[in-house]
Image (cartoon, rainbow, N blue to C red; front, side, top):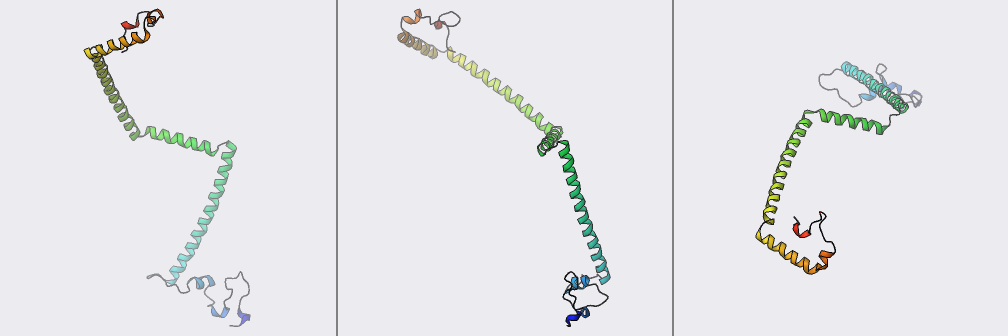
Length: 184
């Protein structure tokens, strides 16, 4: 290859290639793009060229749309800043809207009803258990063994406190002697 035939412009698509090595009708990009590549079956060279051209246009449109989207996002950010909308405020609004959406959903309402019914049933069961325990404690208090235990405690109290217990005003808040009222 003669150096006089080579393109010395580094920005040229023909750089480093001899001019006489290329077909004058085929652009350099297509020749380089097809080097060693075979066309898929059923696709002609003209169809492949058309598809490459369309692909280039679509990629350029995508790049343009990205630039437009970026500009729109910057503009939206500026408007939000001027309105005083901070990311924290937006998060609060999103959470609030999300919670409202959840509360209006059918699944939430059904869950709420089920939990309410379960709470009512649990409350009724605990009330029944409380009543039964109260009744049992009352029965136990009236039993002879508890009376015997209560009498023993009174005897211990009199031995510890002694005679001064009655003169020191160890009366109940109602003004009656504390012996008249059982601890339960």
